[in-house]
Length: 291
Ligand code: GUN
Image 1 (cartoon, protein in one colour):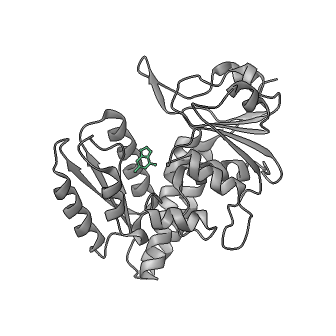
Image 2: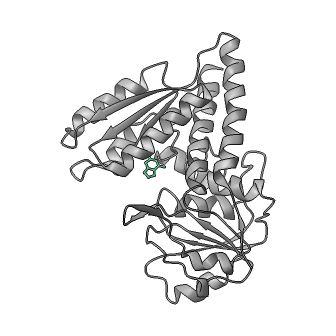
Protein backbone atom coordinates (compact mmCIF):
# COMPACT_ATOMS: atom_id res chain seq x y z
CA UNK A 1 0.00 0.00 0.00
CA UNK A 2 1.12 3.54 -0.64
CA UNK A 3 -0.65 6.20 1.38
CA UNK A 4 -2.77 8.85 -0.33
CA UNK A 5 -0.86 12.13 -0.37
CA UNK A 6 -2.70 14.88 1.51
CA UNK A 7 -1.63 17.88 -0.56
CA UNK A 8 -1.50 20.92 1.72
CA UNK A 9 0.03 23.17 -0.89
CA UNK A 10 -2.80 22.67 -3.39
CA UNK A 11 -5.46 23.17 -0.70
CA UNK A 12 -3.69 26.25 0.70
CA UNK A 13 -3.58 27.75 -2.82
CA UNK A 14 -7.33 27.15 -3.24
CA UNK A 15 -8.16 28.65 0.15
CA UNK A 16 -5.89 31.64 -0.50
CA UNK A 17 -7.60 32.31 -3.85
CA UNK A 18 -10.98 32.36 -2.08
CA UNK A 19 -9.59 34.73 0.58
CA UNK A 20 -8.14 37.00 -2.12
CA UNK A 21 -11.64 37.33 -3.60
CA UNK A 22 -13.05 38.15 -0.15
CA UNK A 23 -10.37 40.82 0.34
CA UNK A 24 -10.84 42.22 -3.18
CA UNK A 25 -14.61 42.59 -2.60
CA UNK A 26 -13.98 44.54 0.58
CA UNK A 27 -11.36 46.86 -0.93
CA UNK A 28 -13.56 47.42 -4.03
CA UNK A 29 -16.28 48.59 -1.62
CA UNK A 30 -13.86 51.21 -0.28
CA UNK A 31 -13.06 49.43 2.99
CA UNK A 32 -9.61 49.24 4.58
CA UNK A 33 -7.60 46.23 3.34
CA UNK A 34 -6.50 43.75 6.02
CA UNK A 35 -3.02 44.40 7.39
CA UNK A 36 -0.56 42.11 9.18
CA UNK A 37 2.42 43.36 11.19
CA UNK A 38 5.22 40.81 11.48
CA UNK A 39 7.93 41.12 14.13
CA UNK A 40 11.17 39.25 13.55
CA UNK A 41 13.90 39.33 16.21
CA UNK A 42 17.44 38.16 15.48
CA UNK A 43 18.67 36.17 12.51
CA UNK A 44 17.37 32.63 12.92
CA UNK A 45 17.52 31.44 9.27
CA UNK A 46 14.42 29.21 9.57
CA UNK A 47 12.39 32.06 11.09
CA UNK A 48 13.51 34.33 8.28
CA UNK A 49 12.25 31.83 5.66
CA UNK A 50 8.91 31.36 7.46
CA UNK A 51 8.39 35.11 7.73
CA UNK A 52 9.23 35.65 4.05
CA UNK A 53 6.73 32.94 3.06
CA UNK A 54 4.03 34.48 5.23
CA UNK A 55 4.58 37.92 3.69
CA UNK A 56 4.59 36.51 0.15
CA UNK A 57 1.26 34.78 0.84
CA UNK A 58 -0.19 38.03 2.24
CA UNK A 59 0.77 39.86 -0.94
CA UNK A 60 -0.92 37.22 -3.13
CA UNK A 61 -4.12 37.53 -1.08
CA UNK A 62 -4.24 41.35 -1.15
CA UNK A 63 -3.33 41.62 2.54
CA UNK A 64 -0.90 44.38 3.44
CA UNK A 65 2.05 43.33 5.59
CA UNK A 66 4.85 45.14 7.35
CA UNK A 67 8.05 43.52 8.59
CA UNK A 68 9.55 44.95 11.80
CA UNK A 69 13.05 43.51 12.18
CA UNK A 70 15.01 43.92 15.39
CA UNK A 71 18.51 42.70 16.29
CA UNK A 72 18.99 39.65 18.54
CA UNK A 73 20.05 41.92 21.44
CA UNK A 74 16.99 44.18 21.30
CA UNK A 75 15.95 45.16 24.85
CA UNK A 76 12.63 43.65 25.93
CA UNK A 77 11.30 47.14 26.71
CA UNK A 78 11.85 48.18 23.08
CA UNK A 79 9.95 45.14 21.85
CA UNK A 80 7.04 45.84 24.20
CA UNK A 81 6.98 49.48 23.00
CA UNK A 82 6.93 48.30 19.38
CA UNK A 83 3.94 46.05 20.11
CA UNK A 84 2.12 48.85 21.94
CA UNK A 85 2.53 51.01 18.82
CA UNK A 86 1.24 48.25 16.56
CA UNK A 87 -1.74 47.62 18.87
CA UNK A 88 -2.71 51.28 18.44
CA UNK A 89 -2.31 51.35 14.63
CA UNK A 90 -5.74 51.20 12.91
CA UNK A 91 -4.15 49.75 9.73
CA UNK A 92 -2.90 46.71 11.66
CA UNK A 93 -5.48 43.92 12.08
CA UNK A 94 -3.01 41.18 12.93
CA UNK A 95 0.27 41.07 14.88
CA UNK A 96 2.60 38.11 14.56
CA UNK A 97 5.78 37.87 16.63
CA UNK A 98 7.81 35.06 15.10
CA UNK A 99 8.98 32.56 17.71
CA UNK A 100 11.40 31.55 19.12
CA UNK A 101 12.66 34.77 20.69
CA UNK A 102 16.22 35.19 22.04
CA UNK A 103 16.71 33.79 25.57
CA UNK A 104 16.90 37.20 27.30
CA UNK A 105 13.35 38.01 26.19
CA UNK A 106 10.40 36.79 28.27
CA UNK A 107 8.24 35.23 25.58
CA UNK A 108 5.15 35.27 27.78
CA UNK A 109 5.48 39.02 28.46
CA UNK A 110 5.69 39.68 24.72
CA UNK A 111 2.66 37.51 23.89
CA UNK A 112 0.67 39.07 26.75
CA UNK A 113 1.41 42.53 25.31
CA UNK A 114 -0.38 41.78 22.02
CA UNK A 115 -3.97 43.05 21.92
CA UNK A 116 -6.02 39.80 21.87
CA UNK A 117 -8.27 41.17 19.08
CA UNK A 118 -5.26 41.24 16.71
CA UNK A 119 -3.56 38.08 18.06
CA UNK A 120 -3.88 36.13 14.81
CA UNK A 121 -1.51 33.40 16.10
CA UNK A 122 -3.97 32.67 18.97
CA UNK A 123 -1.15 32.65 21.52
CA UNK A 124 -2.57 35.25 23.96
CA UNK A 125 -3.99 33.66 27.15
CA UNK A 126 -7.39 35.27 26.54
CA UNK A 127 -7.62 33.58 23.14
CA UNK A 128 -6.28 30.27 24.49
CA UNK A 129 -8.99 30.47 27.17
CA UNK A 130 -11.72 31.18 24.61
CA UNK A 131 -10.51 28.22 22.54
CA UNK A 132 -10.44 25.94 25.60
CA UNK A 133 -13.97 27.04 26.52
CA UNK A 134 -15.25 26.17 23.03
CA UNK A 135 -15.89 29.80 21.96
CA UNK A 136 -12.81 30.62 19.89
CA UNK A 137 -12.14 34.15 18.63
CA UNK A 138 -9.54 32.67 16.25
CA UNK A 139 -8.30 29.15 15.70
CA UNK A 140 -4.53 28.65 16.08
CA UNK A 141 -2.95 28.44 12.64
CA UNK A 142 -1.14 25.09 12.57
CA UNK A 143 -3.83 23.08 14.42
CA UNK A 144 -6.51 24.65 12.21
CA UNK A 145 -4.45 23.81 9.13
CA UNK A 146 -4.37 20.14 10.23
CA UNK A 147 -8.15 20.12 10.83
CA UNK A 148 -8.92 21.73 7.46
CA UNK A 149 -6.60 19.33 5.66
CA UNK A 150 -8.54 16.41 7.16
CA UNK A 151 -11.93 17.97 6.45
CA UNK A 152 -11.21 18.87 2.82
CA UNK A 153 -9.95 15.34 2.19
CA UNK A 154 -13.20 13.87 3.51
CA UNK A 155 -11.57 12.43 6.65
CA UNK A 156 -14.12 12.54 9.48
CA UNK A 157 -12.67 12.77 12.99
CA UNK A 158 -15.89 12.13 14.97
CA UNK A 159 -15.55 9.04 17.15
CA UNK A 160 -12.01 8.37 15.91
CA UNK A 161 -8.98 7.56 18.04
CA UNK A 162 -6.54 10.43 17.57
CA UNK A 163 -3.03 10.29 18.99
CA UNK A 164 -1.02 13.51 19.01
CA UNK A 165 2.69 13.15 19.69
CA UNK A 166 3.83 16.47 21.16
CA UNK A 167 2.31 18.81 23.75
CA UNK A 168 3.56 22.23 22.65
CA UNK A 169 1.53 25.39 23.12
CA UNK A 170 1.73 26.03 19.36
CA UNK A 171 0.51 22.65 18.06
CA UNK A 172 -0.08 19.64 20.34
CA UNK A 173 -2.03 21.26 23.16
CA UNK A 174 -4.42 23.43 21.07
CA UNK A 175 -4.91 20.68 18.47
CA UNK A 176 -5.92 18.27 21.25
CA UNK A 177 -8.48 20.84 22.46
CA UNK A 178 -9.91 21.32 18.99
CA UNK A 179 -10.15 17.65 18.09
CA UNK A 180 -11.73 16.57 21.39
CA UNK A 181 -14.33 19.33 21.43
CA UNK A 182 -17.92 19.06 20.26
CA UNK A 183 -18.59 20.58 16.87
CA UNK A 184 -21.01 23.49 17.43
CA UNK A 185 -22.04 26.65 15.59
CA UNK A 186 -19.62 28.62 17.79
CA UNK A 187 -16.92 25.98 17.35
CA UNK A 188 -17.20 24.58 13.81
CA UNK A 189 -13.73 23.00 13.91
CA UNK A 190 -14.60 20.83 16.93
CA UNK A 191 -13.52 17.28 16.07
CA UNK A 192 -15.61 15.05 18.40
CA UNK A 193 -12.65 12.65 18.53
CA UNK A 194 -11.15 10.59 21.37
CA UNK A 195 -7.78 12.24 21.85
CA UNK A 196 -4.58 10.99 23.46
CA UNK A 197 -1.59 13.32 23.84
CA UNK A 198 1.76 11.52 23.96
CA UNK A 199 5.06 13.17 24.89
CA UNK A 200 8.62 12.56 26.00
CA UNK A 201 7.50 10.86 29.24
CA UNK A 202 4.96 8.56 27.57
CA UNK A 203 5.62 4.88 28.33
CA UNK A 204 5.69 2.64 25.22
CA UNK A 205 5.14 5.40 22.67
CA UNK A 206 4.96 2.87 19.82
CA UNK A 207 2.02 1.01 21.40
CA UNK A 208 0.17 4.29 22.04
CA UNK A 209 0.73 5.43 18.44
CA UNK A 210 -0.52 2.10 17.05
CA UNK A 211 -3.93 2.79 18.63
CA UNK A 212 -4.44 5.79 16.37
CA UNK A 213 -6.88 6.03 13.49
CA UNK A 214 -5.35 9.48 13.04
CA UNK A 215 -1.76 10.02 14.18
CA UNK A 216 -0.30 13.53 14.42
CA UNK A 217 3.46 13.95 14.84
CA UNK A 218 4.39 17.36 16.25
CA UNK A 219 7.56 16.90 18.27
CA UNK A 220 10.40 18.29 16.19
CA UNK A 221 12.38 15.04 16.18
CA UNK A 222 13.32 13.96 12.64
CA UNK A 223 11.86 10.58 11.59
CA UNK A 224 10.68 9.74 15.14
CA UNK A 225 7.54 7.97 13.87
CA UNK A 226 8.46 4.77 12.06
CA UNK A 227 6.34 2.22 10.17
CA UNK A 228 6.09 -0.17 13.14
CA UNK A 229 4.35 2.60 15.16
CA UNK A 230 1.49 3.05 12.68
CA UNK A 231 -1.71 1.03 12.39
CA UNK A 232 -2.14 -0.09 8.76
CA UNK A 233 -4.47 2.33 6.95
CA UNK A 234 -4.16 5.10 9.57
CA UNK A 235 -4.09 8.77 8.59
CA UNK A 236 -0.74 10.37 9.46
CA UNK A 237 -0.28 14.14 9.80
CA UNK A 238 3.36 15.21 9.92
CA UNK A 239 3.79 18.66 11.49
CA UNK A 240 7.58 18.35 11.76
CA UNK A 241 9.80 21.00 10.16
CA UNK A 242 13.32 19.75 10.81
CA UNK A 243 16.46 20.50 8.86
CA UNK A 244 18.74 17.52 8.33
CA UNK A 245 21.83 17.93 6.13
CA UNK A 246 20.36 21.17 4.79
CA UNK A 247 17.10 19.45 3.77
CA UNK A 248 13.64 19.96 5.27
CA UNK A 249 12.28 16.76 6.81
CA UNK A 250 9.35 15.89 9.04
CA UNK A 251 8.88 13.88 12.23
CA UNK A 252 7.69 10.84 10.24
CA UNK A 253 9.99 8.35 8.56
CA UNK A 254 9.46 7.76 4.81
CA UNK A 255 8.80 4.06 5.53
CA UNK A 256 5.38 5.09 6.90
CA UNK A 257 4.11 5.80 3.35
CA UNK A 258 3.93 2.01 2.88
CA UNK A 259 1.71 1.49 5.95
CA UNK A 260 -0.54 4.57 6.28
CA UNK A 261 -3.80 5.07 4.39
CA UNK A 262 -3.18 8.78 3.90
CA UNK A 263 -0.32 11.06 4.86
CA UNK A 264 0.92 14.64 4.58
CA UNK A 265 4.24 15.24 2.80
CA UNK A 266 7.00 17.50 4.16
CA UNK A 267 7.34 19.97 2.55
CA UNK A 268 3.93 20.66 0.99
CA UNK A 269 1.66 19.36 3.76
CA UNK A 270 0.87 21.21 6.97
CA UNK A 271 3.33 24.12 6.39
CA UNK A 272 1.38 25.85 3.60
CA UNK A 273 -1.88 25.26 5.49
CA UNK A 274 -0.50 27.10 8.54
CA UNK A 275 0.08 30.15 6.36
CA UNK A 276 -3.39 29.93 4.77
CA UNK A 277 -4.96 29.88 8.24
CA UNK A 278 -2.88 32.90 9.29
CA UNK A 279 -4.23 34.83 6.30
CA UNK A 280 -7.78 33.77 7.18
CA UNK A 281 -7.35 34.96 10.78
CA UNK A 282 -6.03 38.31 9.56
CA UNK A 283 -9.07 38.76 7.30
CA UNK A 284 -11.42 37.71 10.15
CA UNK A 285 -9.70 40.16 12.53
CA UNK A 286 -10.06 42.92 9.95
CA UNK A 287 -13.77 42.14 9.48
CA UNK A 288 -14.31 42.05 13.24
CA UNK A 289 -12.51 45.34 13.82
CA UNK A 290 -13.46 47.33 10.71
CA UNK A 291 -16.74 45.73 9.60
N1 GUN B 1 7.29 29.63 15.29
C1 GUN B 1 6.97 28.38 14.89
N2 GUN B 1 5.68 28.33 14.52
C2 GUN B 1 5.17 29.55 14.70
C3 GUN B 1 3.88 30.11 14.49
O1 GUN B 1 2.91 29.46 14.08
N3 GUN B 1 3.75 31.43 14.80
C4 GUN B 1 4.79 32.17 15.26
N4 GUN B 1 4.56 33.45 15.54
N5 GUN B 1 5.99 31.68 15.48
C5 GUN B 1 6.18 30.37 15.18
